[in-house]
Length: 404
Image 1: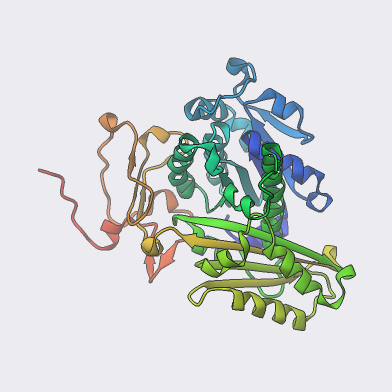
Image 2: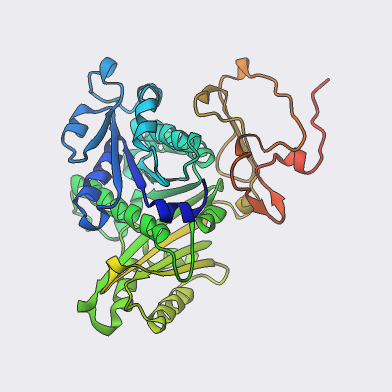
């Protein structure tokens, strides 16, 4: 199921928060009246985190052997804990037309649990967007390494991956702000971003920007993202779109106009009620075009919904490729959600290093011609008239040296 028609008609968007950061984001979403249409599912290995959450649907992971004390940042321990709850996860997302996985990279539960949730959604044929924050610089190299090591896994299993640096908050916070305040602000802004992304995909009846557009520029390509949301009401008068634009630019997780100008891709959505005028829509998109870089790709959508009568919401997702040649990245995945130990990911021209698990027990694969493997039942990812889901050596008719 990759059609946004399905997402709009069925309308069930499930947001799964994994780990302490993910549950914190869900708590913020729960408090947002405008996000009441989202189904929220909280997963954690920390009993206290779940007990304090107002979210109704909760999945306690690994409590029987960890006593609900969490995983202490241990990725393997968290992976085992969340993996045992796959049946509950699949039941929680049953009937969803879109799953959004949210959490923080660098710790244990969010890092490994997010991939398991995304894999469960893919197994059921549900489109999945993974939105994860990356660690603050002051959190140290250990958490950064855990984060970087996980990104390759998430890129492979998610249809769309939005990695958002927490460090972007520095541009909006005072230097004397407390550490607790910084993390609470991160949760709140990610919650607003999750809602903004879900709405830009739910509403689509005028200038259509949809899931396929987002997937075409962010699927399995190494990148970093930022997200901004701006809302205005009738109280802002005739210049309400300008007010929404200013608030969007000042969003703490966007990084300001300079980051917008430097982005390779801008994905923009304007949503309003029946009173949304073509003139103000035109001026808004022209303003964003002027902010974009000369070589930036800008994808826009303008939509209306009766829930937005008197309201304008502007959402932007920016993407910056981490290597100029990442647009032509080759990815070979031997990944299966239930057997992560046999995973091998090879990415060229990327900051991701080749990763191999269990090399001594690596099986020899019988390479058959022109097979899309895991991606057989998914929408092809085409670039320059080539299906990137087919391994490069097969597309180009190259012969693999077996070393004999």
